[in-house]
Length: 149
Image 1: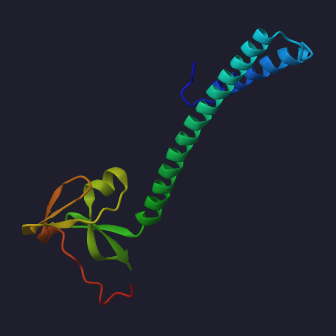
Image 2 (image 1 turned 60 degrees about the vertical axis):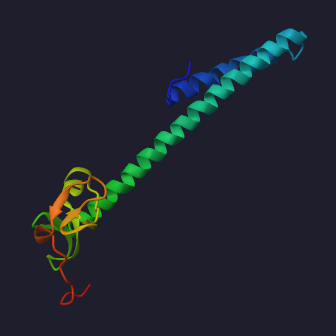
Image 3 (image 1 turned 45 degrees about the horizontal axis):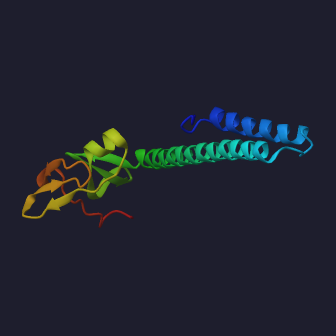
C-alpha cells in the first residue's frame, strides 16, 4: 500500500524488491516458469510502488522549494518595504515610492501584489489576488523623480 510520498514507503518497497531478488538468486536462477513469473510480478509491483512514492516525494520537495524561495524573497523585501496609507511601497532612503502593493497580501502571505485601478472607477484600486478594494486617495502613486532609483 502506498505511503503517500514517505521515505519509509520507498524503503519498504525497495526492501521487498530486494527480498524477491534474493529469493531468485538463492534458487540459483533455476525456478519453474510459473514461480519465476510470480517473482517477477512481485518485483515489478514493488518497483512501481517505489517509483510512485519517489514521484510523490519529488513533488513535495518541489513545493517546499517554491515556498522557501517565496519566503527568501519576502525576507529580502522586508527591509525595503514600508506602509503608507493603506498600501505598502518600496523604499529608497526609507522613503516610499512607486506603485502601491496590497497590504492584505503582504501582511498575510508576504506577497507583493500591485494594486490596479478599477476599470470603471478611478477612485478605487483593487488587488488582483485577494480582490480587496482600496481608495485611490489612500494608495496613491508616489513619484520617484527626486529619488535615485
